[in-house]
Image 1 (cartoon, rainbow, N blue to C red):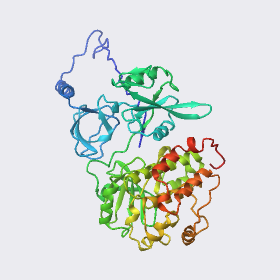
Image 2: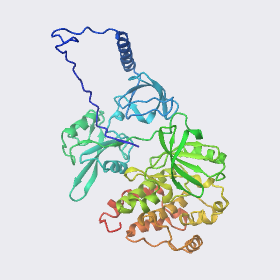
Image 3: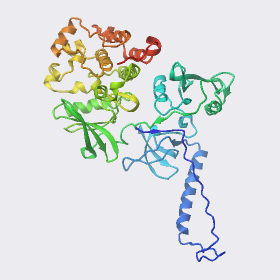
Image 4: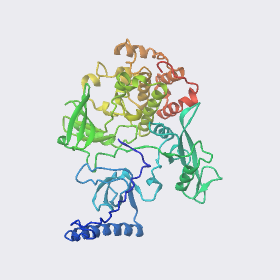
Length: 514
């Protein structure tokens, strides 16, 4: 993913060609004779330009909705269409899901474009400051990322009031330091908008303009739009689900496990991806393809996106690439070693948000631990490998014993009786919380798998890690309730962790470790 400053506009620079007082012969007052040999080329270009302008005017007058590019895009296949931010399109066919067949009114070219890279012309979706269905916590994460000064803002859909919006602004003061304030933008019955009734506006654009010119009661005057991260496309391109092995270049090995190796790779010579290469015999290709059809429909910004597969053995699983690697390695050996509790709790909240989505979709992860969470820029966390554990056909793994099975993360009813549910995932999440606050320490230090199973069955639970607040340890213990139904939901865990430093630990002060 890349990062662009949305408010920047490319300004066209006009240059004026001035006549010299000398002609080609160097004689004062003699003008060079114009060359008309290329006149037909210039005239042809002029006709093409006029045709494109006419097309644009025709579609505008005929009521056809035109779309505008929100970001640059480089074609990945010969069927794709490259474009630049600001280009306008006529959509030829939008019935094929996430990739639309379109004609550029700027270049005249046709091809497939990612639908999440465009928005209707003159809509609020096309505004740089509009971030759509962005949650409050994610708005804060984006605004507080490096490079956004005080007064940086964005507008998003309200999470609590249908038809309303929220204005989120980065602010600073001596007590809180950098923080974000949120203002509800309400809608008038007449169609206008307001934050306070004494200042009403016909459009959101007028509201933004007003508070850009004057703070007028807000915490700070709007100074600039929040930096936006160019989103991933949904899939690699149009119709690129099952890909040829030859289209993938394995560039650098990132890790190796019992059942698979993970590589940083390139698809089609132009797109950076992660590739998990499964060892032959790990799972049946038929079962994998069936499960992968479900997995690819799970789409959430806290889940690693499944891009494509090579379905013949050795099976390749192609996903989005996360530059900081696994959360486990990040905590033990990477930048995560220096993180304090607020960052660690926020990472836990992101994982809980992704798992809350899996919970809503009636799916199960089965192998939730820090090794299966990936980290990107700005401490973004995404859940990987959801659902794959069910397909593993290794005898030692399916017997749920031995070194290959993650006993220390597994709920007792799942480890002993194979009863995997979303509640057994909640147990695993409690173990993951200990990994976060101990910076990647193996759970149940000093105990082997057999001892862990026996002790947990007798009621043993891990004590609070060093410097861990009691309220956070209490949350872990809730996740480890013997009766699965007594464990909290991921929806609850997400809300608890997102509001942790306002509702539970408002007096938190950083210590040496956390």
